[in-house]
Length: 359
Image 1 (cartoon, rainbow, N blue to C red):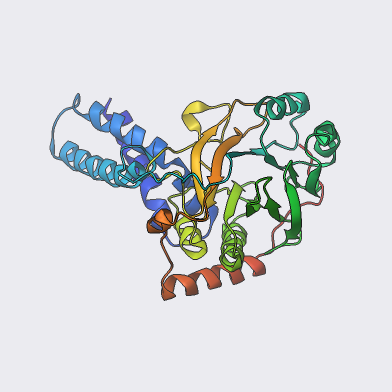
Image 2 (image 1 turned 180 degrees about the vertical axis):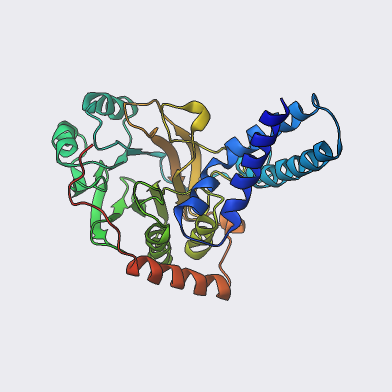
């Protein structure tokens, strides 16, 4: 009993301390993904400890666990309904409600029809796919009669990206901010009732032992997107597989640099990966928006065979309501300098990706 308690306590401490070390190597960045799981295991282990012999070592470990429970809880509560925020509503001058779906389809997932059925059932105004290659592009052609506007970046390296829209695309471009094989999509859209906005789709590489050794490319790509967003004079939505969690240092820096709002704050985690393992699911498919965007619903949808759950959002645009400005955080001079440094590091990093990836 004591041995189990000791091993769990050490692992909890390790997973709590590693993300605090200022290094971009994956071993220090990945543990931050599991903060929810660490909090739950720490709470269970703390409760389990009351069934053990209460000596000095017990008091020390229980004290450490209690501190870590409070620390993780303080961070995580911000992404639950328990965190007090004012929910701002759009006025009657807002656009008609719009819907989008963002989905990492998993390049090697062959269940194309399940995804097509999902789109036909939900009927979003726009949808974004990530890891979509030539096979996925061919499969999704049946949707083009309902989605006549599209922007396609077809790659076989698990970083392909496709954007489909019922709304008119006035302009679109592909960005390669830090590497020539990691695209982002910027699409300028116009609604049927005359509202303009920009949809940004992102999918930077994750820090992991099987992909990128560091988070430099990921962070550089996201912060480059943040700088680009700041230049835009229209309402903006940024969505995609960030391969990052909302509470990480680089995500917070992204939010401050872009001056966008995180709709998860005060609402829910919206955990998406891994789709097949509920207890080991992380919220890494993120969304941020400008103050003119008002979120009615943000949630995951049913799995269609991918390793990510798709994200669904219903929103409206209100150009006359500035109440959400109070939810915007801005970067100070030190944070702006740090963002620039991370962008340059991302550009210099040499990702070891293959042009064609096989399962």
